[in-house]
Length: 143
Image (cartoon, rainbow, N blue to C red; front, side):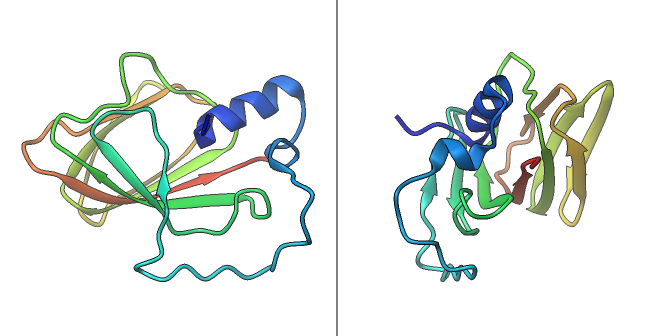
């Protein structure tokens, strides 16, 4: 099983432990610097249909942030249920348009726009256009 970042955040909150403790392995101390070449991006699992993620950050075990390049096809959505988790999210749109609902606010993000919000707020995203959207997506965990 490959849990999403959101799932790990929820598990950590429910158990009262940090996400890093859930991922801890018996390994040497990781290098405090992580370089990810353009051709070395690893796919990041997501249960949401219509979105693909490629990791651009270091291990979520050693850092407090995870980031990915996201490609969202037309009609992609986070689903019927609202998302909610500890931590923060920051989304920056490279191209296309994406709709977000955070709490009771609606946002229509276009190329160049960014949205930063607390994951504790119920949220939802969707590409309601007929064109793909490309984004940089960051998730910050509380420590």
